[in-house]
Image (cartoon, rainbow over all chains, first blue to last red; front, side, top):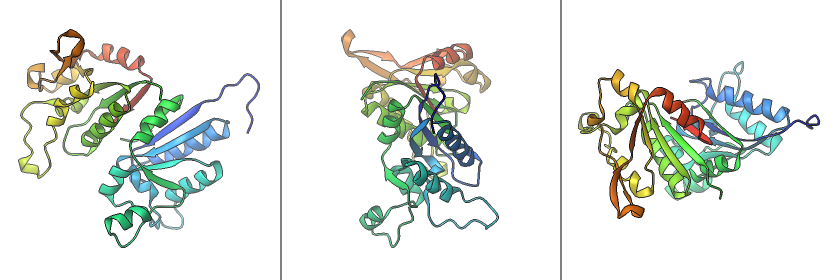
Length: 139
Length: 134
């Protein structure tokens, strides 16, 4: 989507520190991400930390009349080629794992939702250095 | 990678939630990426750097010694909010001595702790490029 002449655009990194449903932080971050993308800005990274890593599970089954927060992130990532990064240290504590890590740890399953990837805290620092603004949701 | 001024704002007690412990992990990584790092301690966050922490009763690791290592990672700007201490009946004497060695000054040991009031803390925050709160 193009911006009007004379407008400026920004690169954002978002940090999500709360899981889905328990608190509104992840919903708010989703709304913010959709809004800035609609205005033509760029979201260069979304970094999930603390209980925020639970936004990346594919095993969540909310009631049908409720919003599907994890799937909403996954869909938004697909539509806008977003880089959704789950912190590996936080994820290991809370049981969020991709196939590769599950195999390495000898676990019988993985649960990472499509559109997310697991990586280190360096991705948050790098994303914050590269972005014009870093916003923290939750905590 | 460019260098930015990062401030990590610690607002929560060291135990009772995981924020303080996982904040430290971010702080140490930011040092590994050679960023210009400051820490702020306010609200219950001031308890993170109090002396004589003892976790034997709660079955959790006492990670308070990790703050003493920050100086070795060139993290030596620890701003502690005066009002937050006072509201909790604490003084600077209740905090761990957190030091760093100034290699430009004959490796003299200097304190990393700066006691600032609420207005000064706001000014310091305003000069940062990235503020991440826990």
